[in-house]
Length: 249
Image 1 (tube, rainbow, N blue to C red):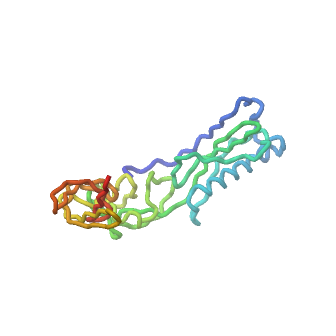
Image 2: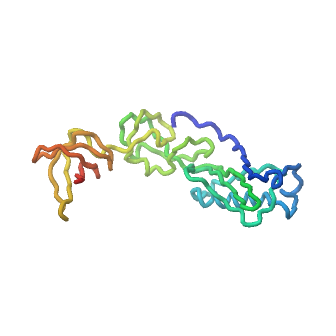
Image 3: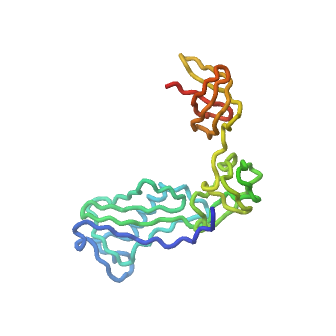
């Protein structure tokens, strides 16, 4: 959270059509219910409901302080009634906690419609209780929980303070700041010069020996270590604090 995120701008609705575009879509002034109740065209309210159901399955469950806003789909939009079921699809790589874009697909006649769905309301967020010095490992006393408007939250915010405890501040963080994954890194499991236990599995047996770390390393990161018995320098993987597993090729 380097700076306060801008308020959410209304999503732009994109409509992508097949080759028979002129035959499958038209627009007209909105009159009463979407589609005017004409069975030749899709009911817009039903399309919004389909997009909302797909978003509900993809996004975290709503709290009693939150609700969905779907679309809106352009008033008066007319889509030729789909011969089969309209299929909702959510593309890979959409990892936001408060919004998603649902593609509604029709095979015959060929058309597809992109409908944004977002969550409005508030959510608990992890906030710093005081200024944090770069390199500090965060504890529960460094944090507090506040309810904040979802539309004002930066990407990568933490809604569960327990997931923040034990992480290291990658930069100075001011008091009262909303914590994000861009500000924090995992704590080092192994530090250069530290005494470590080398662990190796060979022939169905686990062998442990004393070693010394030659490089820093996070959990599951490769580090160079020295076997204090043989003096040999090898590479291993930091499995936990002070434990490095030697992988034999």
